[in-house]
Length: 187
Image (cartoon, rainbow, N blue to C red):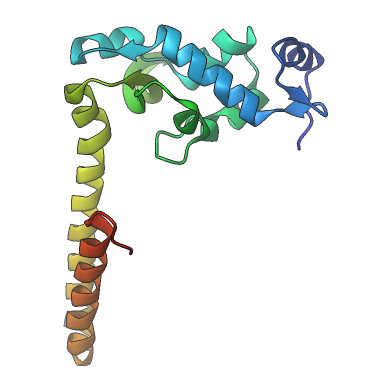
């Protein structure tokens, strides 16, 4: 466990019960992040998303009471929106942790730049979950399929003797996806 460098941050973490051996107790911290999200960051419909989403830094600040770069780095993986994220697993009320990105304008030495930062929020609303959980997965899957097909076509074009292997590869990949997407199936 990596010790928290800043003594004021260590004191703040100790106060909320998240300091273990001078390091962050990630299990306890994930639970507190989940509780904060449940109390202040739930989108009941698509229109509420912009009003409830928060950055990792904002969430850490709300829970710890101060901002600390080291704690932010430790908190990011806890707030992974996938099924294995620690905060996702700490939720017990039927909500799912959702991820989004917001574009903000910042001034860097007199030059205005637009950047994108990640946000998190909870929802149990079907339209919200479709847009922020299912649709991004669909887009990534579509992109992976297109990239795989383009790459296998390139292999086949440049190495024609591999054509039979490419066909077998595509068949095996299709079977793998069918098994993975079938309830009770194994990949």
